Every structure is written in structure tokens, then in C-alpha cells.
Amino acid sequence: MPQLPVCNGVLAATPAQTEGPYYKANTPERASLLEPGMAGTKLIVTGYVLTTDCKPVAGVWLDFWQTDDKGAYDNSGYRMRGHQFTDETGRYYLETVVPGGYPGRTPHIHVKVRAPNGPVLTTQIYLPGEPRNNTDSIFKPELVMSDVRDTADGKTATFNFVLMSRN
Ligand code: FE
Image (cartoon, rainbow, N blue to C red; front, side):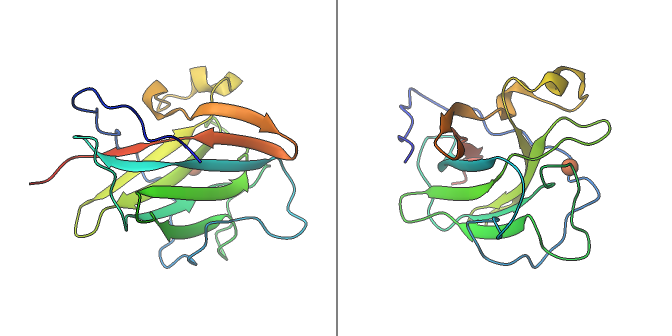
């Protein structure tokens, strides 16, 4: 499990990114997008949802969607789509596969994040070291996962989302 980040002062809010054309509402609630026989490299992404004053937020809705390993979205069903909520410590856990890129886009995972009664943050997260990161016009280094490690059966990575604090 990821460590709660050390906070010295105010965190930068996670930047928003375009939703793109492939979002579908009413996804199944699930932390794992893996299905039997699914191709690709297994990827576990974990992290916290924090406020800019570095407080973890419980019960945050996270709705992930992405391509399969070959860069294809499922636009008829809910393959590679699912929502979940942060636990009481503000953590989430996503089990998926490394997404493929597609024309014009480096590999990315789309996500919508909403704290209870808060606004929706729509953004995308990226993998470090992908050759197409440099040529994707909307790629942002602030949205790259950290602590990417190879494991016996895939990869693990961390990404902490930071939401604007509300008083
Ligand atoms: Fe996309």
C-alpha cells in the first residue's frame, strides 16, 4: 500500500484534462477491471485522494475508463470501465492492464474524481517513459504515475489525486 505523502505546506491540485469522446456513465462498481483471459500487462495503481491542504478524503468516487492493451475502447459494454470509492483512509486501489495508445495519444487512463458533495475533476493519468509521451499534445508530466515497479506478474504504480480544498 502507498505511503501517505509527507506534506510540507499546500499541495498543487491535480490538473483537469479533456474527457474525450468515450466516457460512459453508470459503470459497474469494481476495483478490478481484469477479466478472465484478458491480454496485456497487469497494472495495479494505488494512491490517495487528498485535499490541497493534504488531508486524505474518504468516500471519494473515482470512475476509471481506458483502452485495452491494444488501444481499443469498449463502447458497447463496460469492459475496462469501473468506479469505486476511497476507503476510510482516503485510499483507492485499481487493478487493470497497461493501456495501449491509439493514433495521436500516448497510453493513458481516464478518470473522474468527486469528493462527497464536491465538483467532478475529470483528468487522465500516464505512465513514465512511454515513447509517445513527448509527442502527445495534452500529456502533462504532473499526471505521470510514480513508483512504477515490475512485479512477478505485472507492474505496480502510485498516483495521488489532489482536489481543491473547500471550507
Ligand atoms: Fe482516451
